[in-house]
Each structure stands twice: as structure tokens, then as C-alpha cells.
Length: 562
Image (cartoon, rainbow, N blue to C red; front, side, top):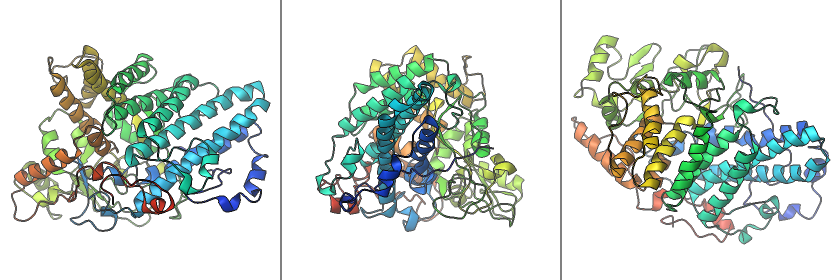
């Protein structure tokens, strides 16, 4: 059983960085006095460092928004229902600049940046008095905090674009009217600097001998993998710095050449691990650990909505299990395309055409049908069209993958973990970056993507396969398309798709194409139930700067959000 150590960052002064702290500057803060009594050694520093991780489990971050809510509305997944009310506003691009979800995530990310800045400044001021042994381990803590700060800024810049760059706590205490929006390229440079420091300082997870536990903690592999992803995003839309493809390829290659990380041999094992809260650093480079023995329903509970909102729809059984809403629906044209590759085992492991009510009942049937009839209906492309748009992700099937020891009987929250970055993601970034950098797919690019495909087909990753491997001789554009499709299959519903489509500059065209595919497949009367109803050119590439913060600052709003 995993254990999430639950701490608040003692040193945080301003919960929301874009609120004025001027009233706190006239007198010495009790928190500032207490700070002198903390972090006097490495053990105390580690306690505070865990607070820099802490916000990751909140709804505003990976407990719900950054993992589930913000990734819907693509060619792969959409939100439940046929309207844009309530929580459906964000996935259907129907939200306004005052949307609570957009504001809360912005605030929580900046709060997390502040916590990282405060930890870094405090540790740098105290580490000189530590013993030599404590200095060694505390240096790793400093690298972890910089890696986390980079992650939080990466989420801000790629989602909100024109943001303020707060590099120290003093900047956060200025009046909001003095805050300045940084060029996104400058923010990426700052992220790059932090991640390079983390990569140079931290050991690979398997080589770590200084930290008592590195489970669910950043490592050299985490920093290199995230940096490769940062470069690939930097190279894409809207910044479009193509010089970063070379850096993305070389950074990913450094991680790959280390032989410190690898794909798990069994794709399904990933979901068994996340359901059971098992840390396996081989493929998991960055992972959010959720655990609470019980839940009060309060936002402070260190548990998330993984499997509850984005898993298989499940009815409640008193004392045994809570219900799962199944609010993430799989776009059926995606299922049809994937099923055209029947030897790819990942489709049936990723897409659920069933629910638990209280036993397994296939979505492709009415609830009175037998499983055999339901299977036949599922295989018939002309039947039960509406129900087939109710398929859900299967990776977080709580009935299948969560053992009793990790169960949390609740209708909204679970102890299922969330992968932020997997080694498979890095392999695909490497393949993509090599193709873009070299202007053609290299043998190394082929090998990287083929390893992912072989595992997906249930084959040894190091052995060439005529069945799984891509055909030789692809053009740069054909290989690009193959990588994009492979990312959809391998990383389906894991929080990457919408951001991928945006950085490729094809979000609008993909939404339009998906609507047409569904209309061609749909044979019943009435409108196709595809709820990504709104899209304005450029407007929905970035989230708006939240209205509350626009009112406090002199910022220029992102394009289209006026």
C-alpha cells in the first residue's frame, strides 16, 4: 500500500499570488518568524518539500482539472451528455473568462510556484549550516523543487500562454498592477534552466542512495523526460521555435541511452499498478500518488477523481463500492479506426463497451440483453448507435484494477494514481523530434515508435515484427501522421491529446473532421451526439487570463477572449 504523506507548506504567505499582500508588509508576519525555526536540517527540509508536491492532488490540478476535465473535447474523448451546462462548459469550449475551473487552476498553479520559490530561497539560505551529509541530500531536495517549479510553469505557459513569470517570492508580494506578462519564450527558457539543473543534480531512480524513499518523487529520468516534452511543445504552436526539435531529440536520446528506464513488458500492468498504488519507476517517470484511508469530501483529502469520472460507469453497492459517473465518453469514430487494427491489444484495454450495474452489462445492448447478444450488437456497426457513444475509458476500471487494500468507497474520489509522464511518451517524442529535425524518419526514430507498437501488440519490444512495425520508407509527412496516431493509441485519455492537437496546430481541423466522421457513421435520425459545439479560430488555443486577475492587473487578454 502506498502512503501519501500529507503536509501543507508552512512558509506560504500569499495563497493567491495575484492578490495584494501589501497589508502584510507593515508588520512582521508570524509565519516569517516561524520560518526561522524550520528547515534547520535536511529532515525538516524534506517535510517542507513535500508541501511543494502537495497541490498536485487537488481538484484544480491533477485530481481533476489537469488530468480529466481539460483534456476532453477532441477526436478521442468528449464529455458526457448533449449540452454545455455545468462541468460540461470547459470540454465543449463554452466557458467564459470568469469560469471557476479556469480561475482555480490558474491560482493553484501560481500558489504552487510560490511554494517552490519559497522553499528554494529558504533552503539556499540555510543549507550552508547543514552537516556535509545533510548538504548532499538537501541538494537533491533543491533540484526536486526546481523540477516541480518547472512543471508548474509548463502547465501555465502551455495552457494560458501570456503569463507573469514570478522567479522569487518578493515578486509575488508586489501590487498586482506591477505584474508584467512575459514572452512565452522567456518562460520556456526559465523552465529549461530549472530542468537542466534538476537533470544534472538528481540521480536516476534506480541509482538513488541518498533519499530514504524516492517513490513518486522526481529523478534524473523525470527531469530529462519532461525537458524533452517541453522542447517538443516549444517547437510547436503557438511559439513555433523549430530549433527546439533537435534539443527534444537529443534530450530524449540521453534518457534512452542511459538504459535506466524501459517499457513494462505488459501494457495492462500499467493500469494494475496505478489502481493498486504501486510505484514502478521503470516506465513511470512522473506520477501523482493519491491515497486516503477514508474521505470526508473536503478538498484537502489527498485523493482524486481518477476512475470515478474517467473510468467505467459503475453503480453503487452499499458498503462495497461507490458509483462511478463515467463522465468521459470515447468518441466512436476513434473506436472504429482503432478496431481496424485488431491485433493491437491496447484498444480493448483502453476502451470499455460495458458498465457495472451491478454486474457487467455491455453498453452496446439494452440492459435486458444477454452478454452474447450484447457482444453481437457491439460488433454490428449499424446497431445501437447512440449507446456506442457511451463507451468510456477502461484504463482506470476500478472494479478490475483496484484491489480491496486500495479501495475508497466513495462516489467521487478514489486512490487511483495518475501518470504525468511515461517512458512510452518519451519514446514517441523522440521519434517525432528526430523526424522533424532530420526532415525524414531515421532508423532510430523507427525503432523508438516500433518499440511502443510492439508492446501494444503483445510482442517483445526489442524484436522486429512484421505485424507491429511501421512500414519502411515513409515520407516525413507519413511518419508524422503515424506518430500522431500512435500517440492517440498509446496515451489515450491520459491528458495529452488536446495539448498535442494544439501544439501540432490542428485542433480546429481535427474537431471539424471528427464531426464529419461521426455524421457519416451515424445512421439514426437526429443530431450526432458530439458536444464540442463551439470553436473560434485561435480563441480556444489558449485559456483566457481569468477575469479576476485581468481586473487586478494591466494584462493584455489572450486573443479572442474579449
